[in-house]
Image (cartoon, rainbow, N blue to C red; front, side, top):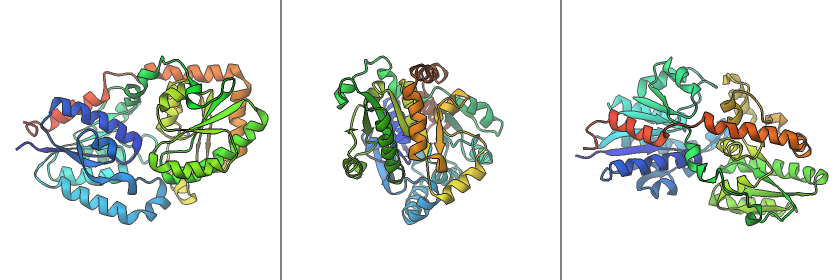
Length: 381
C-alpha cells in the first residue's frame, strides 16, 4: 500500500515553503497522496486539507487563549490522523507549539517525522532542542549557524539554503517599477507592512499610519504602499487606510517587484523583513504584542534582537522598535534618519543585499524531500 505524506503548517510564509516541498515531492513521487493542515496554497499543490489553519494561526499567549477551542479541535484531528497506519511520514513546517505535539504523536507510532524550519531554539527556550532530537529523524534549517547548535543536542540538522531565495530570486535583477503600483513619479515609495495575521494588523496598522503621517510632515515627497498579505485582510485594511487621509496604495500582487522599487519600509518583524533586505529596501523593524505575551517571551529569550536580517547578518544593522518602543514617533524618527541620509541608506541596502550569498545553498525543498525519501524508505513504493 502506498502511504500518505502528512504536512502541517500554520501561517502564510511557512505554507509558501511547504508548497514548494509539495511540488518537488509530487514530481519525485507522483502517485503518493498528500494530506495536511494548510490553506488554498497547499491545496493548489495537490494536498488534501484536513483543516485550514485560518482559525489556529495565532501570535502570543493572549490570542492563543482566545482561539483555544479551535486549536484543540485541530490538534485532536491532526494527532488522530497521523496515528493511522496509512501515514508514511510527517512533515512539520514551523508552527512549533502545535507541531511538537503532532510530531510526538507520530514518533510514538513509529512514523518518521521530518521538521522543516524548526523553532529558533537558539533564540529562546533552548531546551526544546532535546525534544526535537527525540521525535524527529531530521531537520532542515533556515540559517547556517543553526546546524551546529542543533547537532550538539542530537538533532540531525541540515542547511541547504534559505527557501526565501528560491521565491524572490527572479526579482533580484528586475528593474524597479514603482509607478506600476500607483506610486507617482518623483515620489519615494515607502512600504507599510503591518503583518499577515488579523491580530498583527489590528495591533500595528494604526501605529504605522500614525508614523506615516509624522513622516509626511517632514518629507512631503513620500507615497506609501501596503502589500495585503492575505485576501481576507483586505477589507479591514481598506477601511483603516481609507479613513487615514494618507497617500497609501494597497497592493494585492507582485509584492517582491514592489519591494524592488521601495526607498525604505516600516515592517512588522517576520519573514517579510528578510525579503525587503534581500531586495534592497532598508526597513525599520517593529513589533508589539499583548503585555502578557511580551513578558513571557522576554523571560524566555536568549538573544537581544528579533529581526531576521539582523539575526542572519550577526549584527543589528537595521533599527528594531519592540513593544513600548513601537510608537509612531520613534518609528518616524528611525525611518526619518534613513530618509534624510542617502549615504546611510546605501550602507543599509548593501548590508541587506550581502545576505544573498550568506543564505545560498543547494536547495532546501530538495533536501527536505531527500530526507523524507531516506527516512520513510518503502513508504512510497
